[in-house]
Length: 196
Image (cartoon, rainbow, N blue to C red; front, side):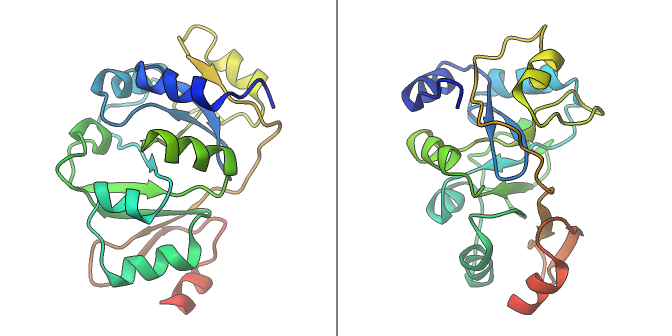
């Protein structure tokens, strides 16, 4: 691990800096979701259109409930699959800045199965969970390649845990009566349907 210091990472986020951090799939670009300037910098660094929503990583169900509306069905899914490689599309609460969601009323939320990241999230709070790459380019699995992609960007901290080449998360929309599987990734459609 590349000099990971939890308090330094928390301090960087508090100061509006962008960090590169590990997840259970790939490396992510993290910023305080409530700091609109930091979030705007994520879009600039990635060269990503502002109308493309960003996912958010949280540490647990109680943190998820602060930013999104939940019910028993959602609680059951979270208990069954998270932390893990599942992204939930939920109805967002008004505390979530529109810049995160591209102005829509839904939010994509993850609880990654990665101890370092869960510690960071429980000490800091929700952060953006978008892949650490320039929009449209492949997401590198090693920090040295990510540093190359972002060599002209002001990244506050890189948390290096070695090579990450995880399968992408499965994405499900649970905002309607029926659950919609938008992307089948690491968790199979069958295992989700069996659970609900």
